[in-house]
Length: 577
Image (cartoon, rainbow, N blue to C red; front, side, top):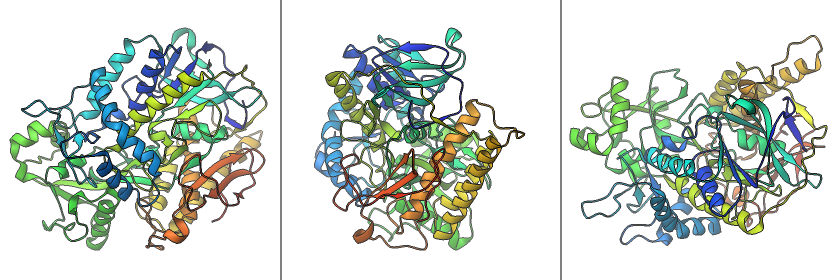
């Protein structure tokens, strides 16, 4: 084990495999199925139950050029526009070209999508799409159906599943190649506590980091564990400042925290209107697509209107749908709204933006390989170059499918081999107490949410630094009580690391682009900032941030300007922008 690691007991047991896949969403389970089919001894590690990841919460659907008159080229154009100049065109072209067949293979796996009376896949529109190309299931339960089909297939496949397991750190051999992971398991009998999965290929499909903010659409398990592990292992991450805030999340009242109910973009795709308290539509005239503009534009417009009117929410009006359409097309959203005392059939839905999807993550190439040999990343944990500065609606499930298949193909072809894992004397990260999680979330929401500025980001950086410094000081004081190793402490420590990297990147990016909105730098600056910010932890220098060359948009292929480094080695301290 190299780099730095979480404070944890030494592994007390081990499982051997060819590949370990960490995560059980569309990306992880697709990778696992393809690896197992290739004859690789495959282990799936998941933080909760097999069907408990972010995929099952996806309402809108999966985007692909499946309809008559639609083409991959049109899908590519819409994706590049949404990505605001930072997409890797090669990655996007691969996504939209391979995407339709990947969806058909998902159907062959057992997923059932809604169909028309003629038996074709029913397609709808969402924000940023100029065509109806979103396939959906159960009206607004697409993720649940995809998860069901993949979980069923995985349970019937020749692979091993380890549930209720939090991955801790990467294992490496004497040459620095991936050799597996350490993990903590609860409720696995002989494999309780901290252990290891020894494998020369590790795939991180751990999902997002939405829990770094107070209000998010992400489930409680989305604490950035994969990104934090990769950083500690020395891998590069990119574009972490680009966090997409979903424009229409059910507003549950001032001060609501934790996972919030999503009101799918597909509702606007079917003709719902955004209105203020007086019933005025405010997206008309702001963008050619009005309510169907890309998510960053809609979220900004909602936030501006809230500021102008000193309001804490706006409304989504779909009363004109009628009861039958609500019940058939959006039964899940209808039930959730009614459970909170709101009937969309007869009244507008109160909504406000909330943290949704991380466009950045662990930097990969077109085969899903990271900058650490043998380590792969897929899904929301990865930065493949597809999303750029802002994710196009419903591209995420497609990204998970396409890159999962490419990762499995690369592993099956190269058959990685590693030596024995080396458990060296790596520096350990002081653990935060579990209650620190709330302080991190509130600090991030105040300073690095939808609205950002040099002042707000500096305040967020100072608040996060204070939390880190307190943990370091407690760890260095013999009389101080430090946090005990455990899931909640590990999660809080992971959240602090990804929060500090996110804020450091947001402070460096002195422009407004995509879902990164700087009030003090309101213009997009292509001359100076049509570049990526790539971050890694150097053992002897702490956090290192570099800005890539203008032409170098490919995540792993990019090479950049001179590094800017900090000084801490046991835990990074971001440099001043």
